Image 1 (tube, protein in one colour):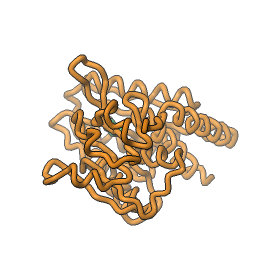
Image 2: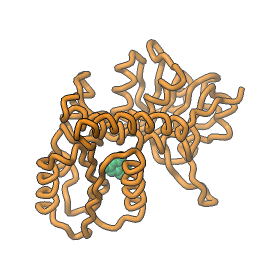
Image 3: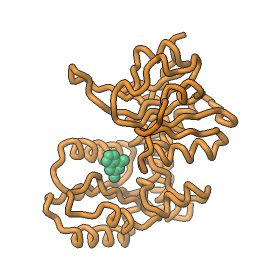
Length: 284
Ligand code: GUN
């Protein structure tokens, strides 16, 4: 079997064009959806990420502002900026790029963001909403994974999903989203005794560890769907995921590539969340 690719670029184009249409409809009512992206310090990877987020907003017709501050910005000053953005009616979504410099308590900053503008879905109110099935913003990467499963018409009810990784940003919310769609969910992590025994049971595997070759062909049940959240470099410096793509694609029914898989979906879902924040604020 050669797995079908789930193309994150193609799906993103489709979803972003829908965002652009809905943004136009909101603009006709006098509301332009707006995202504020806050970057503290000069982490080169973060600079690329925030530039891509701002560009994606622009391309979809969303208003965006990028606020950049030096690495020695004080925590109190950052909290004051977040408060000002909470009160700014032109801003519907606030994203503080992580990681933050060590002298700033990142959780405190996230909790300062109004849950109504928490388009990253990192606030504990957003996490609680996801856990209890209440309306709220879902973290963009696992939300993008759910959209990818939806795009292939995959019915999760009664299926066994294995999530590798237990981060607050991907692994844990991913497990909750799969559970909400009636999958039986196993969460594996660095202390899991026999990862292969778990993954071999899985109909769906989400690899979100940040280490290459975490999932190899011998660990995958024939016909399983494999989503690769990893973003790593191989020995030649080429971008690769957590999954041994060439091996696993011979066993899986569907697989996401890296690059061009989950990556673009993360920004797409940020646009979707920002648009929804604006629609909710406008009472649409
Ligand atoms: N750093 C890496 N990914 C993300 C993300 O999705 N949101 C924020 N705020 N910071 C990040």
